[in-house]
Length: 483
Ligand SMILES: NC(=O)C1=CN([C@@H]2O[C@H](COP(=O)(O)OP(=O)(O)OC[C@H]3O[C@@H](n4cnc5c(N)ncnc54)[C@H](O)[C@@H]3O)[C@@H](O)[C@H]2O)[C@H](O)CC1
Ligand SMILES: [K+]
Image (cartoon, rainbow, N blue to C red; front, side, top):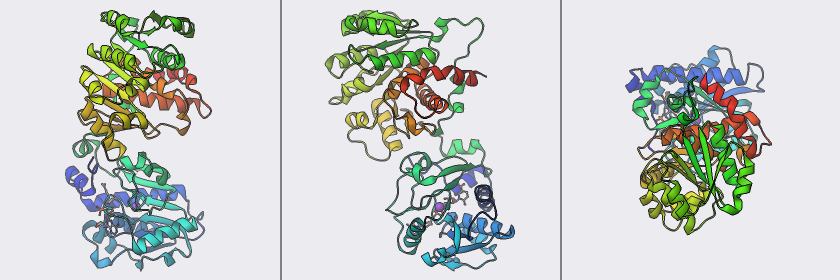
């Protein structure tokens, strides 16, 4: 995934002069600074640290605006002022204050540091005075406001280049988050993220980074099922899930999620010894006998099942692989999760070869590594490559979940709170996705909406949640989306 977008690209595409973009960026940083640290609340002055590129140029704007507003501000520069070029040189010329040479000693008397050393142009691990200064900032635990990204972080991947990064209390970035603000470890170094509009119309972004999306409702709301007075349940599809004989909780969680997200009907096929457990789990659930490949083959003759889920609690083995192949062979929309993925660990191409229609794979890191052992790069790059390789939408689960489609689109999940990390949330997620597929959402949008709904449900319930709390949070969230 190449750089989402760069200043020069954005400026050129938008026909906005770069110096104006830089002025707007610096002003956005200045506004965020005053909001987070009102004048008089900082013990000491504001030390703006500028790098040799446009990130540093932003810093010169911030310093000038602070000085004009009467703030105590100093500026340190990495490299010679004469070496500055273009927009950065233009704004450095407008700075009337002293330009000190970057060194850790500058930190004496500073109450807040503005980190404008490196941004999207970071090209190698930070060394020398810049590294020493960033380390000293960490040691002194000085509050930091980072411009665009905390220096040392790669905006496109969230990885730290080298070992040096100064964690920020607040990071101000421009027009949309970069993957590095959302993916770990970058996410944990950014502090509170402020995404400032600096005058680049969204349309421009569509040309620069057409494939990377924020996973927010506008990405999939146009596919959101509309319920009208004359709607009836068959309008909203019929999801078929397979349940195992032992780990019945997984499929029960998924089934409840599919019902709560609005699937018209939800059926669950299970071995006879487990039928009673499933029948008691929810009167709304249609429980069918037999999830073995033969019973399934007969069951799947029925075209009304338009979305299929296999995996949660089914057990890993040949029978699960064969059942998955039977579902995939129908060409209907399928979600493969958990055991269905692990059952193909030794033979991923067998799985990929069986995919005939819309499919969503929802691996966690371990399942992903077993299915796609050779893929390298950050989570975004790996998920995108996996989607291309498998021909399926791949939702790589985790606190920084990534959704990637075979056509190159990708979305970053930003609303997964840490307390989602509890047993069974993956089962709920797979149920949400199959329930949305049943209602006609395309695979990428169903996966993105499912991931967003899971996070929204968790945020609504709050810390201390357990997975079975999540499906019942959906009616309120759906009602808000229906408006
Ligand atoms: N996206 C936008 O619309 C805007 C972005 N702005 C800011 O511009 C920077 C990106 O500017 P750029 O000059 O490309 O990158 P940097 O300032 O991060 O470049 C640093 C500079 O330093 C050199 N360098 C790279 N790594 C190292 C290193 N480890 N040690 C020493 N020197 C290094 C490299 O040659 C670069 O030239 C973006 O982050 C925004 O803050 C616009 O100002 C506003 C609009
Ligand atoms: K920075």
